[in-house]
Image 1 (cartoon, helix red, strand yellow):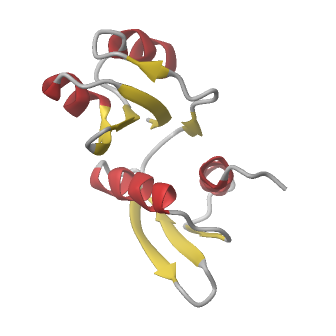
Image 2: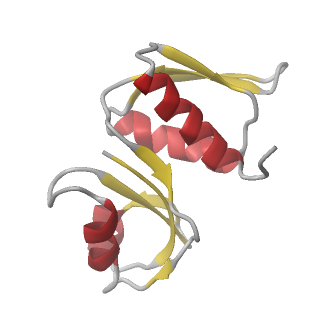
Image 3: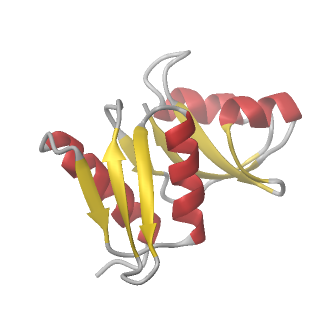
Length: 126
């Protein structure tokens, strides 16, 4: 079993989408996973998520996206390198979201460029 909760969760979400399922239950939860789910919900990739504290799982209702993956290894990027990685992982200029972990918390690549911050690449979806 993998030790990367976020990677396992995004794989489960992607597999459920390919199987044309509406919902998926993720068995392990972490603070990082919840923050990524918040960003995905804001961008419309998932409709909603519900955390079950007793069962330590999360139920996710899928929205509109084609791909969601974790960036491995988690590259450290400076503010002027974000564009290079955006071109590597996202399919087109205004399509998709790259999630970056900064000193101010998780944020999308557009917000990081606007604030002039770098950080570690976490995940992407489009």
